[in-house]
Amino acid sequence: MVKLQDLRECLSPDLDDKRKTRFEVAFRSLGYQDDYCRYHYEQYIKEHNLFFSATQGELNNEKILNPQYYRIAFEAHCFAFFRAFHALIESIPYLLNLLIEVNKDSESRYLNWNTILEFCEKSKSHKDSVKKIKSLRGSDSYRELEHISNVSKHRRIVRVDSGLLSERSKARLCKEDLDEQFRSYEIEKLMNTIFDELHPQAIELIKSFMQR
Image (cartoon, rainbow, N blue to C red; front, side, top):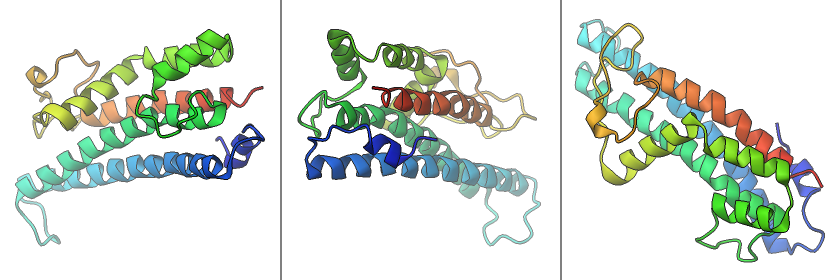
């Protein structure tokens, strides 16, 4: 795992205190987003199981017996997971800018993956890192994460069949709510696949920028 001290050592010695502080906050924020992802995943599993128990009349120690309550809960955690992980991935260019100083304005609205790529390609630097960025952004997991996050955040809540989220069900996410084909429409499987594929890539990408 990347450590803050390791990244500090890669900062320019001319970096002012304000920028150093923002860098440390940005790095810690990655950890917070990571914690949020794990929390929402765990709560999703919990509420999803309670939903099935409620629909089967098997809740004995819960005050709320209405399955709809648990449906709303697990759907909320489902989309919160994807949004938190998308926010984590999309915050990396901001961290990288603080590390390699692509843009002097660390709060620029135009800091993104393309900003980092254009700088590296123009300066012919960080060639291995460029490959890693393109690999991450070109992956099915990145495409799926970006799509489901943007659709659910900016356009509509994707309709979820209550049975979709279980391996024991053949129910499907309503495909007409998505504009792209997904590899799987089982949300738990999708969560695990996207996280397991992109998380280590993101860590290795950040580490690659630590190499002088």
